[in-house]
Image (cartoon, rainbow, N blue to C red; front, side, top):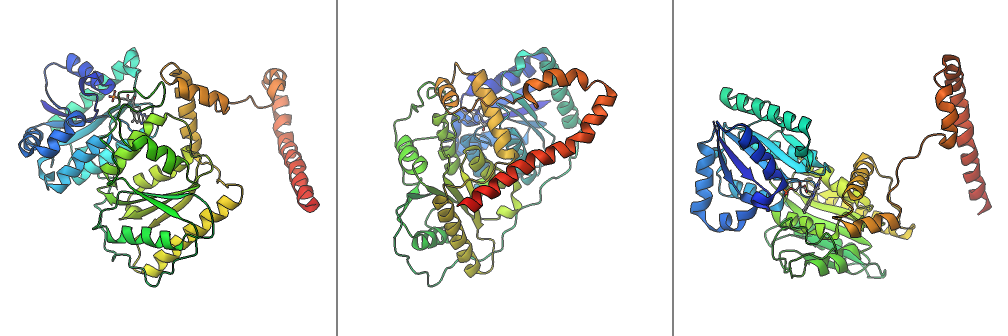
Length: 462
Ligand SMILES: Cc1cc2nc3c(=O)[nH]c(=O)nc-3n(C[C@H](O)[C@H](O)[C@H](O)COP(=O)(O)O)c2cc1C
């Protein structure tokens, strides 16, 4: 079998993920492995058509394709995303058609599922037969049982390649038939309020709807808005995963990135991410921006910020991106104000939605920076980060200090506290257990009653 491996890690052969491939190669030497270090070579691939074509030809001649990648900010690294964009831009999907494919990733298991869903959706767009991938926690290879699991995974994939197994499609092809958003008679509001509001965008001149959405927002917002266009900023490249930043939260690149992040993004009371979708996510350019935020570590620095998203493109058909956006706000402890897209026939409706977003942001800022409660996306994300920072406190000392100071090591407390010492043995007695559950409804209600009454009293006092 000839397996082509597309390695998305910018760390090339030093990468964690690559060691998983080495393990497979060592255990299954009967197969041929053709590895392309996409993450490291993306600039060359972009510039050198002959090199790009040689990768495509290898894919065409393969019996199977493995997408090998670390999870970077809920997706694959910007470099691998760019490679996928190049395939679409150059209309080269046919090179992938009919191939069996799968993913092999490493991560801290934070939103790894979204990276896998994305690669599956893209594989389907390329006409491949995609089998469920393998998502490893980065150090898992050290465990015997996990190595066994990895061998089994690979064996199954080989069988699928040999049989040219047809797999089910999870995603429909994307369609988009809406007209450009063209607002009329938008009156510029007096700038009476003094909040810091930023729009972060990668809009180009040809993105008519997106530019109009930003323009409408800037006019209707009753305070000054700074628009940061990352195409115009000095951002030298994507994150290389070097972890030089981990100790002091300083990125090795010397460019404008950290200044923009600290002064325009974190410092804002309200932030709008405005972008056009590219394939099934936002652009690799925007992804560069997000990956580079890793310099800041795992600290939820957006506490109390109002965040909205203006999206041009078929977001309703992109559950992966939608979940990423909501998750991003929740994990950052920002308030997810909402998403405005241009998926409407009627431009007036889009203008109203932009106005709603503005009203929502202002109301929340003026109501003690209201943040809606977190769902699984934020709660789960926090717990994973908390455990990760605790485990890797030597690697991320700044994060560790921050988590301690902000009391983010919020380990679970035992229900009933110290009474549980007595209750645990008693709960093994069936008659006690029956009585306990019979009483528990009443007890709970009484508990809540007290609090509810207290709140009502406070309100009447005011
Ligand atoms: C820029 C950056 C972003 C990351 N984002 C995530 C993430 O969203 N979820 C996660 O579980 N791990 C994340 N990680 C951790 C990596 O996925 C993990 O360390 C991986 O094993 C690195 O693999 P590599 O050495 O092959 O590049 C991130 C690491 C970096 C450098």
